[in-house]
Amino acid sequence: MSLFLEALWLALDAIWSHKLRSLLTVMGNIVAVTSIIAVVTLIEGMNLAVGDAITSEAGADAFMIERVGIITDEDEAERARRLNPRITIEDALAVEGYSRDVDAVMAKVTQRGRVTYRGREMERTQIEGVSEDYISFSNYGVEEGRLITPTEVRRRRPVAVIGWGVADRLFEGEDPLDKAVKVEDRHFRVVGVSAKKGAIFGRSQDEFVIVPLGAHQRIFGIRRSLSLMVKPDDPGGMLEAMEDAVVALRIERQLKPAEENNFGLFTSGTILGLWEAATSGIFAVLIGVVALSLVVGGIVIMNIMLMLVTERTREIGLRKALGARRRDIVWQILAESVTLSTVGGAVGIVLGFGVALAIEQATPVPAAVAPWSVALGIGMTGGVGLVFGLYPALRAARLSPIEALRKD
Image (cartoon, rainbow, N blue to C red; front, side, top):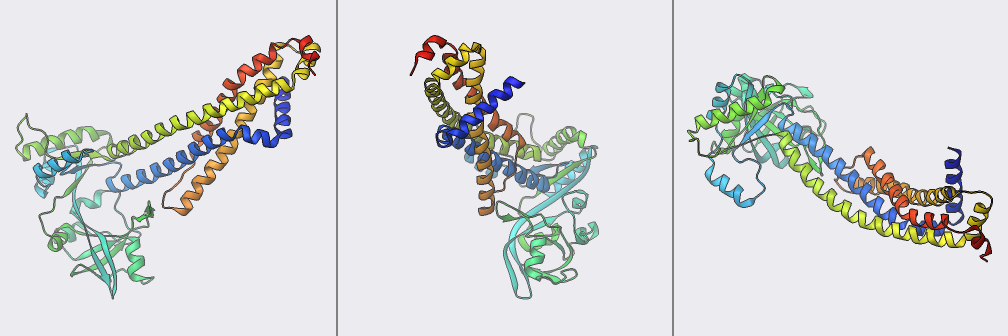
């Protein structure tokens, strides 16, 4: 331990004695680590924000049935929209009636529309119509007032739950409960206000109005395809409930065994998996670019260390003459190389977090510190210092004390 601390102290002293040269030497490491830390911090923030939004929308304990499943090819998506029939209430009843593993099936439909109150207006607000089972899903709740009751949904009553953003913009501090808002050309009495959810990528998640499904269809028509949310009795029985839902829909739609499903079925985990696959691709490309920068930085470090070995030939010869072993010399040079590289990594980590936080303040892109990225930055730069410092260290260790002491 004493040998390690001595070598570390000598390395730090050498770096401090030549501050400008040391800074220029590790500039490649600083740029590389700054880049990877900034991108990782932003990706981590986006992953958390998107994960929360998807879980809030789809529910962690439920799965969704859509007219079109998750498709990445535009031609396939167009084909599915053309051939797949609309999701209807009959589909919801078929799923609920077939499976014993299903606790609730909610049908919903969403459309952008105009919401007004006493001359104040919001265009393109999300208007969501829900069936009576919506009350069984945890992603629906209120901070003030109450939810729409199943009876009100069944009887298509003109009542609504509004998002925090709608309440804030339309009522401007006035209590919205029991007030009437106008959705398109129809009046709805506000019975509840949802808790604030915030924004994702600058887009508010609080500008919505929830109304009974039947009331929604009176405004926007009945030909729009529904979405179904299915909640199993037991979250552990998700797979069985999904399999039952597929069977129920195939029977309802009279599909033959050889025919493909003409509907989409997925969980929040499915969507998150696609998102994480996309961000993983970005991260993989970044790693390649950063690796190239670190190699260049490592070559610079190796050249500087070779120069230092040449400058300190007499010092190394004197140490060997006084009894220093070859491994002592190797350890000294390696410690200086690793310390130099790691200091550059530490500076890059600080700058990377600073860049990510500045981007978060200036744009809607969220950021979140990932502790493993700190270990990654330090580990990569430490490894670069070790690999590229090894040759100068071995060269220094092979110096003959007599020849070294003869150098001017």
